[in-house]
Length: 423
Image (cartoon, rainbow, N blue to C red):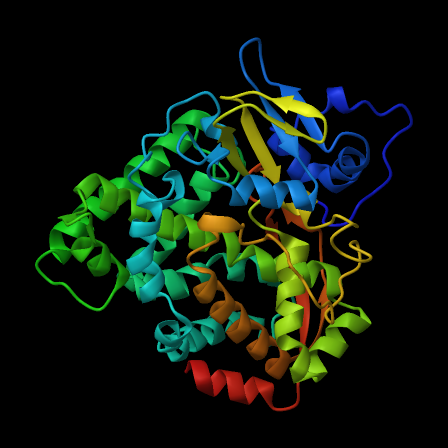
């Protein structure tokens, strides 16, 4: 989807918009629609059929409230639109589908395992993987940056979960099928639902086999941590461990590949690239701006636990409420000049990682990966130029670029340096 906004036609009618339609994000411009919604209908009801509908929230303040207040809005009935009107089988078993206080007890050990200090020990391994991903750009006439970035999450998640390297390509494809089952490149021949179910079956079967092996070979990895985790004095059931393995690998593949592609699509060939590349002090503020700008997790869903009024609209107990993160992150009341990619933006209270109790538990891993990636980009490449059409994922859940062809110009002796490092 476009990460900047284009004008809407005269006579545009919000009631004609279907925010569940994946083609809107592949070929359309949701930011132009969200801009109208923030101004005229910040809490907007969309009917899906005769029995189903949901409220869309597009203002930053409201998004933060819905995500933060678990006493008003629950995560236990499904957090993504494809679960609208269905029971979430992961309810109470997976961190993302569990409310406090149980969620707090589940999150604690994982959060402890993912502190900055603990994550940092993987930095050398991740750096080596990043250099290997960038190596094909050496001397290539065209380099698909987005395809390379699709493999980035496994450099961290695969390493930290102790997953065999030869399995990484398959796991990358299966997770992409899970987040974009409507995309023609990842959809199976039997339709969206079968694609989603097939991906889930294969991922859960994979982790089921992995757990059987790992129980006898516990190590210093996140899967072993889940196997040893106790909640209320009891070990997690196998189903809960499987759900959380799925959640970990899915979370990595939602954020990490699409932040750099969204940022690079905006800044290549501009002065922003040069300013960011040449000033190390701007690395971290630039990364936060890349997160705000790209907002790869497109939405999170909650259900109202009781009647609540939001911006004059009556949300009834049991209603689904969908927070559009990309919309919240372009709210002019929260961000000055929100449609400008500003690498000096401070403060930058974006909700790209969510907010409240479900703030992304792997944010330390994502930040480490992105910091390593952009450091390598800045040290290796002088510039990039677009070399073809940008293609976006068909997905209402992930705002992602799947093809970003570019031509790279190397810095000085970078070819020799990178070639030696990945040899």
